[in-house]
View (cartoon, rainbow, N blue to C red):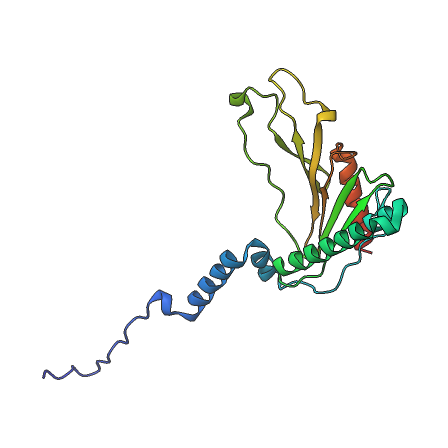
Amino acid sequence: MTADPPGWHPVPPRRSLLARPAVTGLLGFVAGALLVGVPWLVLGLLGGPSGRPLTAPASLGGLGRAQDAIAKVGKDRGQPLIDRVGKSDRETAARVSAAYGGAGAVVQQYQDDELRRTIQLLAVRAPSPGLIAPYEDAEALGLAAPGTELVTFGDVQCLVQHDPVSAGSAPDPERSSVRTCQRTGTDLTVTLKSLSSEGNRDPREIAAIVEEAWAILTR
């Protein structure tokens, strides 16, 4: 065996990039985000969610809690529906909270006294991505506008659904309806979903109700 030259020291083998703790930790973080979803990634970057509970307002936009509106029409006859609405809201709130890593969340449906107009509030103590309208080539389809349009009013985004209208004509506001409006910040997201077309056609009005809910929930 040949002797090593004087002053020579063996060079330790270079560690694989994947074997380095910082790299493996980052890969694990990204993998977790892909498996659990975007809300987990957003919350991880911002230090985690707040589990503090949220309480839904007693009314929004002149509409009362769905359970109260149904009870006014007939509590005894409407009790099964009241129970279903309450269970649906609680279960949905639990799923929203779970999707955001345990953040405090609340879900509540609101209706008018005639039970013709319905909106649903979803609020969670966490940020969310902005709303997205799917791309549609209205010109190629011979339409005046895409079927779903994203509109913005201040800090509120809304998705509006239009009935198909031929190119050269303007969408009829009476044949359009708001699907969802949302405002989000660093520690709160407020979303309103339309559960009926009745009374939910003006996105500016729904956006104002989102702002009303935001003001109440951030007090």
